[in-house]
Length: 143
Image (cartoon, rainbow, N blue to C red):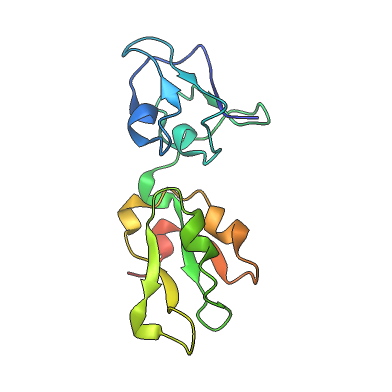
C-alpha cells in the first residue's frame, strides 16, 4: 500500500519536487494525488509536507522532519562484503564505491557520495545482507 495525500493538501508541490519516481501528480494549489503503482514508499513526501497532508501506508499521519535530521546511511567497512546491493537499491544513486578501499576481488566499500541527495529512505540498510549499514540522524553523521 502506498502513501496517500489527504484533503488537508494545499498543493504546494513540495512533495512533487522531491519524489524520486514522479509518483505525485496534480495542479499547483489543488489536492495532489500519489500513483500507488509508482510509489516506492520511501516516505520523503511525508517528511517534506508543510501541511501534514500525507498518510503513511498504515494510515497514520506522516511526520514532517527537517532535512538536516533525515537519517543517512553509515557503512561499517569491517562488516561490509562489497556486494553492491545498497548501491543498486538506492532510488537516487547517492551511494558509490570508495575505490581507495578496494579489497581483493571487490570494487571497494560503498560510501555516501552525495549526502545532500540522500532521501533517508533506508532501502540500502534494509537490503544489506550482513547488516553493515545503520541509518543515523543526518546531523549526527560526521562529514
